[in-house]
Image 1: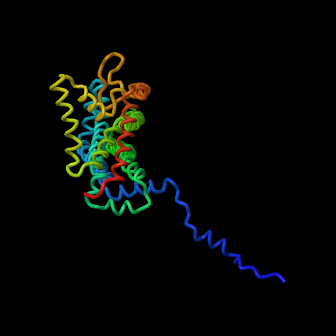
Image 2: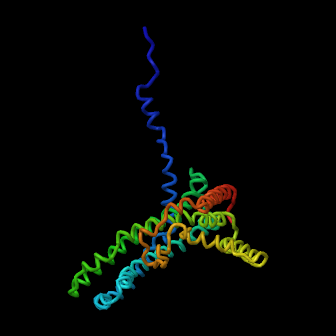
Amino acid sequence: MSTPSNAVPGSSLETQASTPAEMPATQPFYWSVRRELWENRSIYIAPLAAAGVAMLGFFIGLFWLPHSMHAHSGMDAGEQFLMEVMPYGHTGWLLLMTAFLVGVFYSLDALYGERRDRSILFWKSLPVSDVTTVLSKASIPLVVLPVLVIGITVATHLIMLLISTGVLILSGINPMTLWTQLPLVQMEVVLVYGVIVLALGQAPLFAWLLLISGWARRTAFLWAVLPPLAIYFIEKVLFKTMHFAHLLGYLVTGGAANAFSFRTPSGAPVDAHFIPLSQITPGRFLSSPGLWIGLVFAAAFLAAAVRLRRQREPI
C-alpha cells in the first residue's frame, strides 16, 4: 500500500506568486528623476515662463510686422535676413540662459536641501542607492533641462512662424517670402548641436555644484563661488596671469569656442542670432583635450558627491 504524499500540488505556484517580482535596474533611476521633477517644478516652469516672455515680446512686434516687411525690402539682403531671424535667435538664447540659471540653483540645493529639511532620512530608508540618487540629480541639468530647452524652443519657433504667416496673410502680403528666407530647419539643427555641446562642456561645473551641495553645512552658494574667486585673485595678484579666469569662461560657455567657428573664411564675424551649419566644428570640439579632462573631473566630483551623501547627516 502506498503512503499518501504530503506535497500540495499548488504549493509551487503559490510560492512563485508570493515571490516579489525583480525590479528592473533602471526603474529606481526613473522614479528618482520623476521625484526631482515633482519636488522642483521650476525645472519646467521656468523655461515655459521664459518662452511666454519671448512670445509676449513677439506679439508686441507683430503690430509692426507688415510695416517691417515693407521696410526691410529696401535693405541689404544680409540685414534683412538678420532682422527676420532675430526674434527666433532671441527666443533660443533666452531659454538657454534660463535653463543655465535653473541648473545652477537646482544643483546647489539638490543635496543640501534634503539634509536641511531632514528628508534625507526618509529617502535613505528606501531601496535606492546613493549612486542612483546622485546620478538622477545630475541628470536634471545635464539631460532633462537640455531636452526641455530643445522641445520648448522648437515648439515656440513653430508657433511664431505660424502666427507670422497668419498676420502676413491678413495684411495681404505673400508669406512665402518669410518661409523661403527663414532657415528654420537649419536653426533647429544648430540648436540641438549647441545644447549637446553645452551639456558636455558644462558637466564639470554642475558636478562641482552638486559636490558643494553635498558638502556644505550652510551657504552653499558662497562655498561654490568664493574658492574660485579666491584662486582668480591670487593668480592675478601673484602671477599677473588670467589662466583660471579663462578656464571659468570655458566652463560657463561649455567650450563653444571649439564647437563653433565664429568667423567666416573671409574673416567676418558670425552674428550670434544665426549660426549656419557650415560654422559648426564637431570634430574640433570632440578632439579638444579640455572636453575630456573636464568630463574626468565631472566623474570625480560626482563620485565624491556619492561618498558625501553616504556619510553626511542632516543639518
